[in-house]
Amino acid sequence: AQKVTQAQTEISVVEKEDVTLDCVYETRDTTYYLFWYKQPPSGELVFLIRRNSFDEQNEISGRYSWNFQKSTSSFNFTITASQVVDSAVYFCALSEAGDNFNKFYFGSGTKLNVKP
Amino acid sequence: DAGITQSPRHKVTETGTPVTLRCHQTENHRYMYWYRQDPGHGLRLIHYSYGVKDTDKGEVSDGYSVSRSKTEDFLLTLESATSSQTSVYFCAISGPAGEQETQYFGPGTRLLVL
Image 1: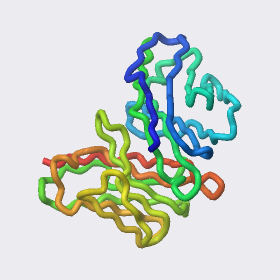
Image 2: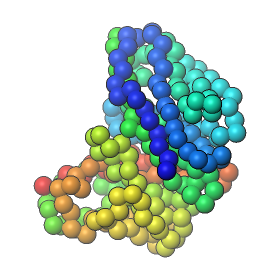
Image 3: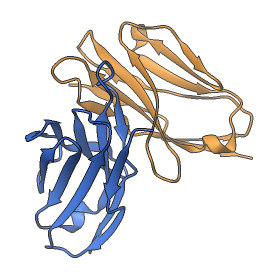
Image 4: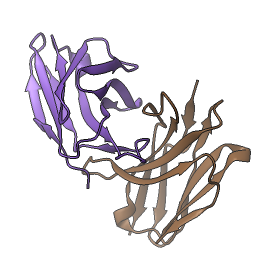
């Protein structure tokens, strides 16, 4: 069975602080994909990043960065110099490749509050 | 942004009435999904479709049925709505060929069953 754990239910930071959102996953497959989505207060789900299991390179996109470590089954998300607009619920997700690649397993989400 | 629309965006209905939610895509992508989102449960898959007339159940399919008669439309039906089906419903589509493992979500439908 697959499982995605986001142990941090809610995090509050002050603007300009750095914050890391943790994601730990479980899978027996060697080929899989990991994702992060953002759900702002308006409610839509916004795709942020996809990583496949063979690519452990960290990725940076502006103030966002992702650290994928297979050794610890983690795919953590860091926001540098946080802003109020970053306030949202962030979901980590796991998907298997192959016949079932279309099935996602979502974490329960981490609510990030960025205060001015 | 992926071209996904959901209708209606908000609906209030009474227990026992049938309800149909529509998901429409303009991307011509193969896979489509219906999820529900509830506090404490995150997103849970109801049904998905891997082509016209090809559908399968997700983890919370009881009380729901789906149909896909055209590539662009995926309908979710609550045959007899219950209060436990009050939720936010999201439709999603897969990415294009080569990126089909990614899912892109519609804006959501808020359903209240009284």
